[in-house]
Length: 321
Image (cartoon, rainbow, N blue to C red):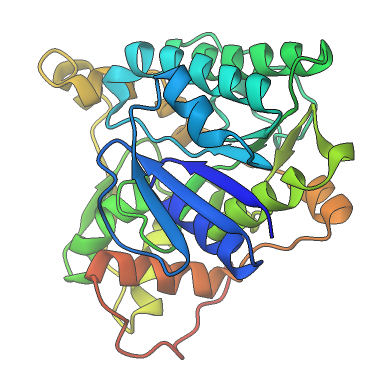
């Protein structure tokens, strides 16, 4: 049994903590408040994770430190991330713990081809450049021998505890039988990653030195449209699918004048205006992992939206049906 420090108690952090406990490790789960849902075998700690000295002291003796931080909103990324990223690098360098980062696909920037490991980070937007820079700095420190770092990227999250992703945020209304609206186009293929698959991949690469110094994709099911994802979440809960419409194209331009979320969303809406596909075949093959079945992802997403087990967990959905 070894000590592992998970920073961030959102859905990915919780899933990572549970995965580590299941494997018999000592787990410290860090968040700003230190409060929240308890997990058997996990010690919760309150900490300002931008405090490099405090984070280093907590990480001392750990085999790995997992960056599962989730900023509270898009419009604070530019001020929220830099000090936290630097503190995590410092803690990893000073303690020798492997730095395992949960990241998104923003760094790649707009692309029409399926995204694969090893392709360059070409983002031009603020959030994409920020995530790309975080990985570039970690990789540079890894290649210089100052620390060990590895990054796992996933697409829009679904699964246990996920309530703020693009599908999850409309799920409560859809499950209540109401028509919903999504950004971009409702009928284009889009990849969705289960938070448990992010966790399993992060834990897997943490313990395999040959995987360090590079980006890995979490196992992810074949892409589906936003309309199908919402419909399949409804079916997984034994509910009838609802109409899935799109927001008018001008909503972000007009809304951005008054609402920070809409203003920041303009940078990433391209992800829903063209096919947005993550290819995880390399990591599945080399790490021996497979994505959580699509119907189970939809069921867990429905349960997160309802705050309770679905009425009939045996109800299945078919990918592409």
